[in-house]
Length: 196
Image (cartoon, rainbow, N blue to C red; front, side):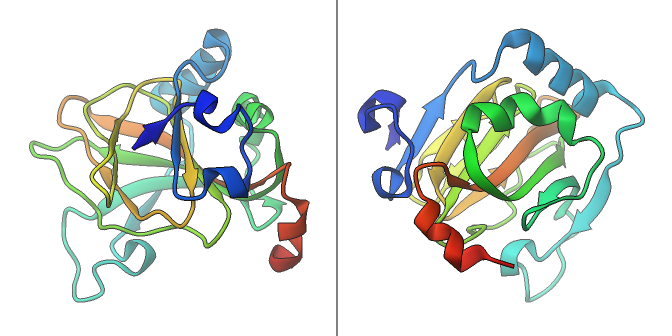
């Protein structure tokens, strides 16, 4: 079941999001979103890196030629690893995390048929979020059957233990999103587990 912020009294914490998915449309100011979309979808000099197969342990039995995507890591394990991170500050600031664990962008190529990479979860016991940069008929499919369609400036925030997979689009050349894993400001006690 997809929830709204009202269902959890407008407060995102590990306790009140356990087992839930929160959907928010028009997450950041439209002008800020437009900059993000222009840079990630239209800018030809943005650096994308190819990833293939074995998404979080999926497809270990063999490589599937459809299992190719592109990514760019902005932040990993408390370290800024990209000079491009200022571009996505509006999303980070709106989430207001105590700590980012990992933040990256994904680009899934459009195909003639939808493709699912395989169910997985990114990290244990923190919060995951998918911020959709462009609109298309791809999205995020959760193992319980809930589907969140990619819509520009939409975010789904969820318990990081929930298994999910990407659904590639068939109506655009590429689906672009931000995948964010973080510890919410409400939960500093969790930080002990993630000290490097």
